Amino acid sequence: MDPYEQAEAFIDAVADRSRVVGNLRCLAVCHYAHGAMAAARGDAEAAAHSLDAAVELNERIGSPAGLAYALATRAELRSAAGDLDGGWEDVLRGLEASGQASIRDHCLMSNQAAGIRNRVPAGDLERAASLVRDALAADDEAGPCFICRPELYAAVASFHLATGAQGEATEWIERALALAEVGEFRPGMAGALLVRGRIEAAHGEPERARDSLQRAAEIFGELGHQADVSRARDALAALPTR
Image (cartoon, rainbow, N blue to C red):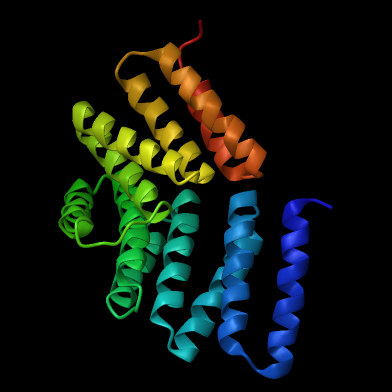
């Protein structure tokens, strides 16, 4: 059985039991897990359905951390689909929920990364810059995390690339990649390689960009992250032909 199918079968069983015993907090986690996996696999409709349920249930039970994570993931999903306004609305709600969460730093990093990735394609570099400043100001206070930090650093690198500050973009993406490698966080490694490939392409280094993007596509493929595989392949297709 496919690893995702195994995970989904397990989550379905846990969700069913949670409904029986009335454990809404556990059920909310199941909805979130389903949504996050569906988003990674490129099933936007299933992801949206599960994440909507996760947002609604976390609001009902009063779980700021659960709400913050669900909103950050839904913001990423909406932004990737081109719904930048909807994604930004989720980011704002997620940032508010993060401030009330017991794991505030991790929730903030997730929503700040989602917000930067939303505002850059929207051309709203002023708000993106504000998120970057807030994130970096809190960076020293946040605890170590080999998941949230690489994602955030990659988003910061994307912001600097959009502003034309390629030196800063390179610095931040190398930090993201190094941290993901230390933590053996393969999705973070692939995400950083994708951004590094874009930076190298913008710097006029198509062969280095091709290597980074191909490595990103390979890792995403091994992980079953089909939506990200498509993003990496799109970036590869945009490179000049040999």
